[in-house]
Length: 210
Ligand SMILES: [Zn+2]
Image (cartoon, rainbow, N blue to C red; front, side):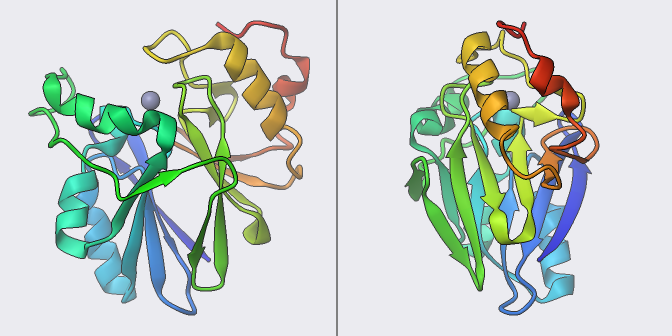
């Protein structure tokens, strides 16, 4: 598996391209406004985008969902609980976006344990509420890779004081992620990569996280 990261507007988001190098099938994780750059990279790599995976429905992470789908016919997927955010986002202006995003109807509603196949890779959905009700992490167990969106960052976690956030659920979620193998590589929605083993602060968490 090859992972490419693009640090992108609107909020220094990390947008990822995961490529199964045998089949050349790929997925975008949280495109933000990196659509053009991500598509340029798929072209260079000769890869085809099969899915656009959203770790959650906030408009900074999902901004280029529709523009990538319209060009690639990839399927937009999001955990079912956060799906309504994709349509709601179109109703409001945001200071960090040039215009409200297009309303997006997802093609796939993910649940806990949903598996997507990408060549020989299996991407498993983990429901990880806390930043939003329907936040999810995408786990490629065979590669020891976890895409955490705004749930887990290097040294911290996503905000829980935003709409849909819950400090109590975030604690539960972080403790769950802490059970994954220590060498699991974490690809967060903002900031540098880390591993589960490096995030020792999770074991010391006291309720609640604020
Ligand atoms: Zn967010």
